[in-house]
Image (cartoon, rainbow, N blue to C red; front, top):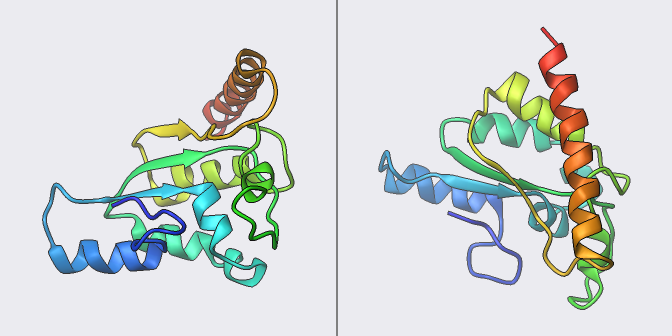
Length: 143
């Protein structure tokens, strides 16, 4: 289940409830950082670690990017804040990844969200990959 803003299944808690109700081992959920940020206020975002911990048995995929939480709701502008190259924006994406791996025990795929990203796409990808490799080294260096 992939919660997506402006779709019937928007919120992670809704997806989690459905996955639990359907109760099939092959069914899980995806966590998409920009969609989550688009649908939660700053207060709700403080509970992200609790939400991810609750999702642990069902979490199959994460998609991340650089992001700056915003109150913007215009669908033509929102992604300029919520989808940025990795390492950019004010949201602590590394902290999220670190928590998911270290505390939640997530070991599934982590994808890079690049929808509607402005600028030179190959350069954006190179920068994001360089940030990812730095993060990977940091994570591997931790006990």
